[in-house]
Image (cartoon, rainbow, N blue to C red; front, side, top):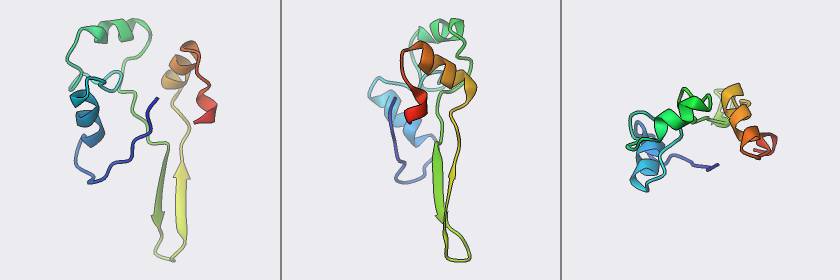
Length: 89
């Protein structure tokens, strides 16, 4: 797992940088340039494993708002199968 925080907000920023360093985001059919896609599909990964855990912003009222989302089920199952505890993230 990697925690990444986009700086510029450019489209696909995290995906492009991960691919550049030869660690494409799991399930990324656009920037993953090897033959491992079929291997991950066989394990039930059929989409991009990129998840925004939380987003925060200042509301018009001036209050800080933070929205947190759980890890989607396919990613959760994969992490459990890989021996990770997805609930700590």
